[in-house]
Image (cartoon, rainbow, N blue to C red):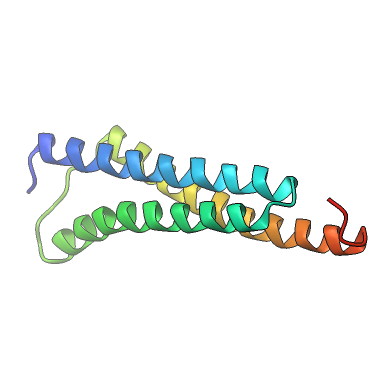
Length: 112
C-alpha cells in the first residue's frame, strides 16, 4: 500500500496538471471566439500535454492497484479524479467549439 503522503503527492500532481489542461482549453475557446484559430490550436495542444501528464500519474496508480498494491481512497484523490475528468470534458468541448467558430467564420464570409 502506498503511504498517505504518497497518495496526497500524486493527487496534487494530478490536480496541478488537470488544472493546467483545463485552463489551456478555456484559453483556446477564447482565442477561437476571436477567430484566432492558430493560437486556439496551440492552447489545445498545451491542454493535451498537461492532460497526458495527469493521465500518467493516474495510470501509475491504476497499474499499482492492478499489481496488488492497494491505494487508500482519500477525499483528495477523489477530488483529483474529478479535476482530471472535468479537464478532459472541457478539452473535448473546446475542440468542438473551435470547429464551431471556424464554421461561423466561414458562414460570415471569412470576416473577423
